Image (tube, rainbow over all chains, first blue to last red; front, side, top):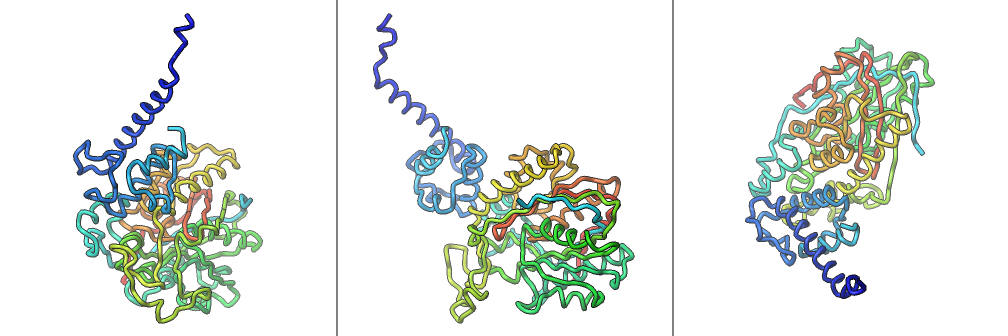
Length: 99
Length: 353
């Protein structure tokens, strides 16, 4: 019986990792929807979003608005300017809200 | 807290004037075609009105005011209060309201003053004029608001030029003890003053020869220091946070439900901002008239233009309760709740100005 509850502690860190990865997949899906001309699967966490085809300053506002609508998080112009990759954006959102 | 109600002042009428000359953002040559299409789709702003060189906001407002006086059958000599709200006055000194008093043929017994506000200006101006009229039995007032933003923008700045459009409005108010109360919630946060700013040409940073030198701030943004600078992202964040909150506070203060408002007339900033606000408030498209496609962002004139263009017919059929919400430069924002009982509303006038 005791063995039943004897869960190896690493499973929790693994679980946290899996949940975070799933959240990143969702986050990327939202961004992909805004870059509607790009093929699905092209954008990953490491993608430098400003290098994507179709990027413009208008896209910056579109992403900020999408993040606001999905997560109720407002990233400032200064925060956005410091972000390079999709992961950077994801981390900013994650730090602000339990997603 | 600037939440208050003003009894006994009636909104008698609204007229708006835009320049005839129309420019399409699909022809905005300094950015690639794909980006232009994305811009129009996202901001909702296709056409904008551009005044002739030399035309001032006061010219557009004077035009609207004359049309309104005529429609109301009011004589200029009956006007006791003139408030002119703009960020593009004729001169730095004197106040343009004085020139308008003379041009409109208003009597010397009329008080006249300028107010320097932009996108939040319409609810602010209504509150000022109504407060003054409240203690002036039978008095009539003109509240003129608008901007010729094209005069302070760089046409080579893709972050600002395609958004703004030129217009002037005239609103007539009269002291009337039978009128429904007007309600206001007006707020300010000057810590954000740099979000929308003309950096030089005032007295903090006077114009020098360097002020007039054009520089490329980033691709597609070429301007000098006397041009308007707009931080789109920070303005978005500010607007979507404060406008719904400010409007809700006023409704709650009055124990009014959102469904009791016939129309929510928001300042027309751009579609991304306006749709985010609408969705946050959970109100239907039918409750939120919109004029971005045709008239763009005309600063303090967006609210009267949207009333005149989109809900004029509804207002003429029955009295409506309107929630007006303005937000922007300052940072400054506010809401007004008004009833349109027997208000005269002219369709938007196009003038060769």
